[in-house]
Length: 341
Picture 1 (tube, rainbow, N blue to C red):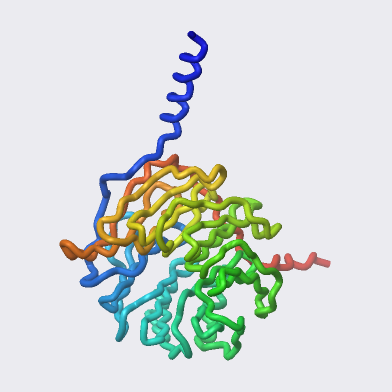
Picture 2 (picture 1 turned 90 degrees about the horizontal axis):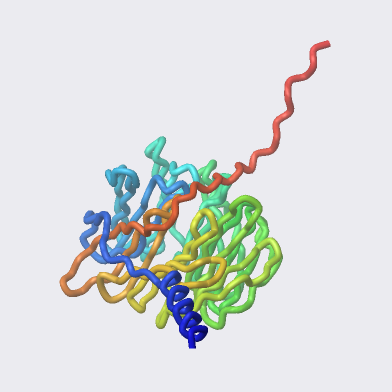
């Protein structure tokens, strides 16, 4: 009889060692918005946080002391935001199809009329272009150095619902039919990633050491992790019971994050697929979740009706801190000085 009892106690210990954790206490709340917030996104290095919402405003924070660096407004609800790799450029899109690009160093603001609703946007790693995706079926590049729309379109034949970009400037375009198109810098298709059965809602790329990973979310209520060197599906994460609005990867590729209309944000082990941490919604749905560079903090945005509140919440994950290596700049080696004769 002793052997079965020993085995049972081992099972209990193993279960408790991998028990899922639920966060309960917030570290900080940001209260500048006056209506529902659509997104809150950390910069690549975790030093900045950018938020936007239905109050038509964009807020840009220093993420170490939560002092607001800058804010500006649109004429309509702000639906999408992005920040450049060097934290010097902010981009935002509003419901009236307006795109704004703000250069913090020069205080220069560019404004463009977009031909269709903007569903997502991303800066390239070389800080040359901003790419937007649209429900009109096109990806459009904006030349940041010239300060103008490049007059090129990458037509994909159906609504483009999400976009991300790799460090080698391959674009990843999520489509309404659940496919993810891999495009080169000229917009030519290199590969199609298939696996989702519903519209792609979010994409996020991370390059760490020699690994290249893409995480995707879909209306099929699943999250998928892809190796975009080999174009293989590595893992599928299931458990959400409603639409997944946003996904991210930690900079060291250890964790996958997801935010859903089921009212939760989740943190998953990227290797095992285990659901590690739940972040309860302060309201009806969680619209966005973002993690800083050392995995210590996440920001979440929820729709809260009773009582009404418009707050970006910052949480301490309790995860082990490990500083990721910064991505290598895509700069061609320069020739050295000519030898003296």
